[in-house]
Image (cartoon, rainbow, N blue to C red):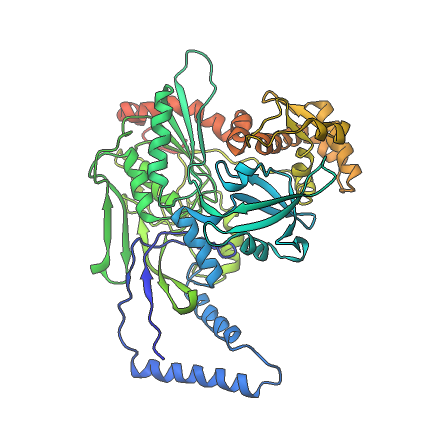
Length: 558
């Protein structure tokens, strides 16, 4: 039987294990030649092997298991990012790229074996019903939820739009479980989840902070709306946070770059096996914010579309890149739709920045496990690739991601914190806090007086001036002991500031949402602090490039 496929060139992160991949945008029929006589022979040999295993092997083996193993083996001979999508992973990837899915509007994870709500999304069915962070989903459609894997539970909670799902929730302070019937709806996945004007000394220019978490179909429009609002609030310069952004759609990477660049400036080029298929993408219109100073924050996990944006801004000397060397993902995948919900993500090209940098890091050893595991060990890409020049004449290097103009390492979470984090300790401790005014991120889901009375001294009301002081840390240590969570008291004491920051982040996130959490802790982010200190340099680079170049010793590394 001849398999028919459709190819979806998307620039998406193929998140299977640690893999991050990218593809080109568009949907078109696959165009391929019929198999050669030599290929027919090889395919027949493969079929014969499968037949003999199925009929003669002493244990029964599912043909699908064998087929998937052979396909995975073939792809593993190619590169780290070619991949076979099983239907569930392909569906989830498409949902992410399309910017939404149909469900309840909650983020859940297993905490101590219990299906726990981490946060409801604003404006969703769960949000409107008052389901809140820390709630435990004990039953789904009357069945014990502890029997389900995370994937099984998520599949049960999702379903066709407009259909109901019944869930039972246990909540601290309530003797009886709470029953909800939630009507599924489309849940938008925002790629610009929050933005705000940073608090800075009076008299200084205001800086607008924008978080971009991935690149889906709505990223450019969300970013434009965010910047427009920040400008109305007086922001004269921008801090765009692409840290830990795994990438996304190529057309959105181009569109986001265009927001900051001048018309006709090159953004990225794609080069494949056949030169006639090469493409060059330019800014097709004047960038609405091409005259605003900008610094882009990047991390070792900023990949693919994130690197396109950072590379274009750096190559054109449009702004400064600050943080760590990026992931180094420069392979482009075309996604071929296969029968029965499967899809093939196959590397078809590489992308290059305007200066000609090859961003893909080396994988010639064929050890793909090391490729993914060691990605955090690279301090810079100085030894990889050739030296190229920006438009201004600054030296930059390619072949291993985008090296930042200003290198500021991200703080590492101390090991003693990791040990308690794996038990969900900070999240569980944060569920003991409630907003002082009885209202939080979820309107109508405030803490009731009878709940406060039932929980007694196990609950603490706080406002947005909350800081984890010495008394809070003492409560946290007591909590760890009460819950039987193993911890190193002396080690945690040595890292009191990190413990306090982690507590504050969880409390703010649970009570007022991720944006409030980020805003409350941003002043202790060393990369953000360094970016604010470097903003005058970004402004000088934009307004007087020659003066900037002279001030950095002719473009040498600082």
